[in-house]
Length: 407
Image (cartoon, rainbow, N blue to C red; front, side):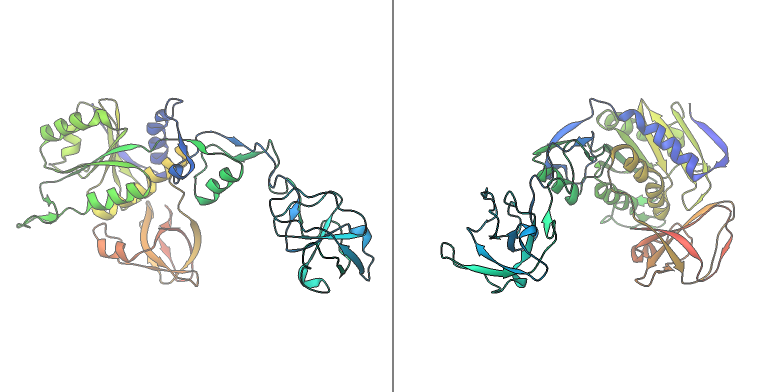
């Protein structure tokens, strides 16, 4: 049977509840191995240890001449040019008193310990291979323009930790180490249900007292962008029995149910009514917008109940579900968090964590878009950031610093 909290809980406390609700989904059985490119945007499921040194051999950082540094005095000297070393070749040992033309990335010959760039040579061009030639080179200390074996990572070192978000850089590292596939956490399957007698699908006739459903598109796009697999049912009317039947029909095929609307204390709160015989808690989080929240399980399937106003439901996703997914499964990537200066003053309820929408400018200032209202979809569409005003802060002046999450 659902429970109702009478006090406001903090944002952090509710996020802890969401984390505890979803943590059981992380089991050994819920790991899959994917080819590297198919793993883009996923969270790494296990530690990855480097199986070899990177680079695997000492190589040249420049096009130039490989030398023994001891052969060249401070004033420079003339050296006999030997066979060139192209990238991919396995060169012979460099004899004393000689210089080998070497290409960027090519293996350093045994005995060579420095590279002189071609631009510093006289003449500053490579001789024709096979023809006798000499070159005048300046002195170079050992290690100059040489990439040592293992200078990036050593064999046996931790390359990527479990929970790492797999972007292009991480997949590139795995490829450089010879991996063709990687263990990842599967993306969660989410049932998204929007409720409300007043809500109609876009494209339908808009009668008196009706509004078009923006929540489904808003949340589904946010979820898909975060890597979730979304099943969208369309708008569910304010009929508890119909909602219960819908959840029972789709619930067994998903990992998580997310509803929007019907979680406040009004007379027609359909989600509350449908959850009456289930372990779901409804209460208020000390946050504006997005205060009313539901959390629990329906027939064993985790449930999150978000408020019905569009901005409220998106802020709920960004504050609770998205960061918990990042913590637990490594995906999506965390929102970049920066400090920015307010372009104008603001006020905030002192007992709530306020989340305002804003535009972060290149000069490090953030301009608020619209007011604090949870219905301002146009202001949300103009925004590129969420502006955080922590609980206990009632007034901030222009120029004051705030935490900003970049969208």
